Length: 134
Image (cartoon, rainbow, N blue to C red):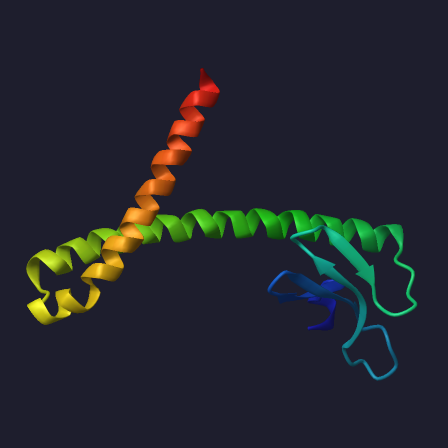
């Protein structure tokens, strides 16, 4: 198992990760994980842990991970939006075919306000894009 492990481990957190160097080359043949940095995806910040100096290799691995992570999160964002479109379609079908009057009364105002807000933003953004293209 130890031979298959990566040299670095990233414990993902909301805005980035804690970065650990993985060590399996010790007398006890156990896995040691030594925290070397904290990274923030949103602002691109890499903070060495404690009094540690990061090597060029450490920094390159961290920057590569940050780039890959940002791409993955962007993919997830668009996938979530495609799911939202599916949920809207399913909600429409539910409202038309299965919802009781009481259920509709419970959710109609919230749905209408959310859809109005979304429509307003989408129309404004589309207009901005069209004006920019002129």
